[in-house]
Length: 159
Image 1 (cartoon, rainbow, N blue to C red):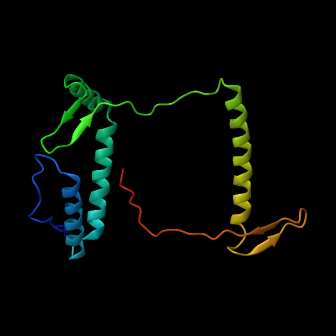
Image 2 (image 1 turned 180 degrees about the vertical axis):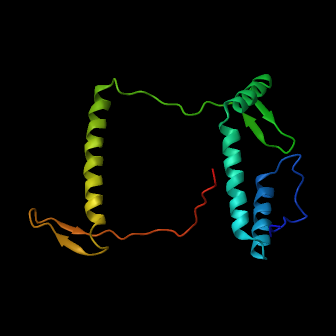
Image 3 (image 1 turned 90 degrees about the horizontal axis):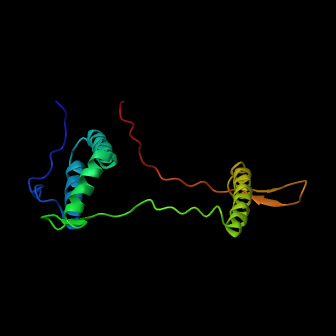
């Protein structure tokens, strides 16, 4: 049997949803339970599974269509028992500026500058951080970039 930390007995009722304040409290309680001896790897895996599940539901066109239909029946908004407000909205709005000559000119300049920047960044990455190097052909001085990172974790779920 898996050794999984149990969640606190003081969980709010999930039949009515949770406020942001309750979610924050639940997160704190859950992390403290893990710190007190829960199996952190199994909990991290369970969280990744839940994340994939939620993304899958939210992306499902049938679910979105059903929810939008419900919102249309309710003048574009529904307020839940816990106080959450669900509203119809337009997302992913995009404009096509490509027919405007001024925009095209600026876009071309930006593309050229972006390419120059990328080439410079590649050159600077090859120089050790903080070390100065002189380009013998141009006399230009380059200082190597310092690398920074944040240690975290990655979970790859089985297919």
